[in-house]
Each structure stands twice: as C-alpha cells, then as structure tokens.
Length: 256
Image 1 (cartoon, rainbow, N blue to C red):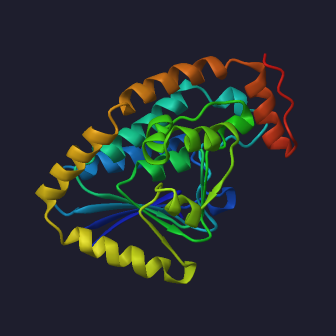
Image 2: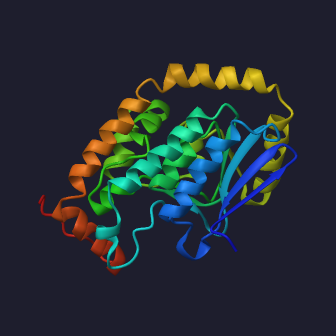
C-alpha cells in the first residue's frame, strides 16, 4: 500500500496518510507528495474540495524523526517541505478539510490547523510537541494557533507541549467540529458532500478574504520559524532531544 493514498470521489480529493505503524509520521517523499497534490488541485475541474486524513490511531505525528541518525537526516529542507504543505493548504482555492481521526502532533498538527474545516474525533488530540525535542513550533503554528487561541493559550500549548483533546480544541476555538468517534465518518462525509455541492467561486473568495484578515502574519511566521529552527537544529539540545525520543527517555537539555 502507498504511504499516501489518493482518490477523487464525487468532487472530493481524498488524501489519506497511510503509515499507521509509525502513526503516519511524514517521510520526506510523503510530505512532498501531499504538498504537490494539494497544489495541483487548484487546476483540477474534477475537484471541489480537498480532504486530508490518516489511517490507524493517528492523523499524523509529524516529521519522521525515528532512528539513530534522525539528527543528521532532519534539516532545513524538511522545514521547507513542511512550509510548502501549509502554503498549499492555505493557498488552495478550494475548501480543505482536515478529518482528524487521532493524534495530530508536530507538523501533523500544523497541517490540520491550517485547514479550513477541521473535524476532530472526541478521542483525537492536538499537540505542539516541538519543545520536547528542543525545537520551536513550525508549520505556521506560531500564527495559526495564536490566531485561534490567543497569545496566552498559544504560549501554554507551545512551551509546555500539553495536548488538547478534541473537545478541548473545539471549546478553545481551534477546530470547527468535534464528534463522537462512532459518528466521525458520517459527519466528515456529510460536510464533504455539502462543500463539494457548494459555490466554488464564492468559497474561493471567502477563503481568501478570511485568511487575509486573520492570517496576516502567516508568511512572516513561516520565515521566522524557518530561521529559528535553522539555528536550533545546530544545537546539542536538539541532538539530545532526538536521541531521547528514539531511546524513549526524558531528554536532558543544557542550553547548548
């Protein structure tokens, strides 16, 4: 089975991340394919709505930093691909639905929270886990999360790396819908049908206007995150954080 399953059905382009054995962690190739597929959707007459979801217990836990050589493999190029995904989602002239079937962490959370409609299972959770490995939030979340939650709760989520449940995310205004797990598929299907049947020109204009009003700092955030992460990736703290993640132990950060 491919790592990213794609299909078009009744005007909806479904992108399903399919690496459940690693909680849909994004390989470099998978991330590029997600970005390119969403970018191409703009020029497809058979696509009226884009849906991003995952298989198994996770939506996506973000970049794949498993393995002993993670610190050597993970560099600024991974950030550029992550930013490409966010720009593709926000810039797509068609509604993008994130169907959050489970945990969304790291750039997985970034991608979900960049979507226009975010449907979460009650059992789902959202986690900006970057601080746990010595990094700062990226994927535009320093803008998108703050735009939804406000500064105080965005700081709490980013600095303490505390997860929000699906219900907590909804109550805080971070997602558009939360639903019992048993009703998740039916609600996603209902919303996708409604969007696919809606007025595409009006949707495109609405999305552009709302994003222009609420995400004025997105491009600046992406660039600041890229600069910050570039510096942090050279630190001993990040090397320690990634080793600790692989070893399943608590990291010891020394500010080096």
